[in-house]
Length: 237
Image (cartoon, rainbow, N blue to C red):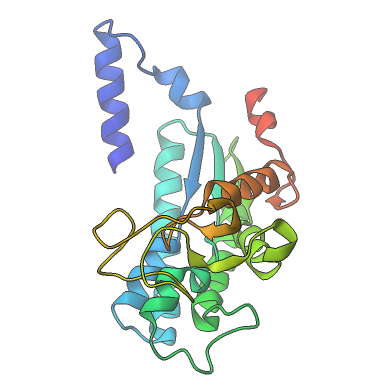
């Protein structure tokens, strides 16, 4: 695991007197933030697996997350902040790539099957967090429902000042998604919009600063956390 190499290297450098590296106490007191799921689901769908095949792979992904959390715990981690995955089917990239969406689009214009898979993953992730909280003595695991936060922004876009919730600010092709896999943001042929504050998506995958500000505010509200603990809790624990 990359973390184990990072920890070993940090401790080694710290032992030589190098400044700015964490010691064992630092790793024990650190808050481990995990944002996971989107790439695993997206990779499965990109391989043209059926909805059933993608869903059947979810337990394997959850098992790997379990192993990763246990490894962090075994190496001193006790504080965990876990984000579930967002509405994959609302990303402009996915909407552009899926040519035949007829019958698989919800009221917000998102791909229903992709979002359904994300929700099944999220349910399993929440159960995992609750299960591991009871198993790992002294550990605190907070699960944050990022999916609900982001889907609310998209489905109620006008309430938040967004006019184009399913269109990338930076991309190519114009409406409805302003996305082209051959001209992605930053590459020749792409252009950024002039009013990024009216867009949810920056480049078809990542959110704009305006959308992320709302997401961050909701995260800090504790309204989407299980259990209802704030980030400040970990500063005094």
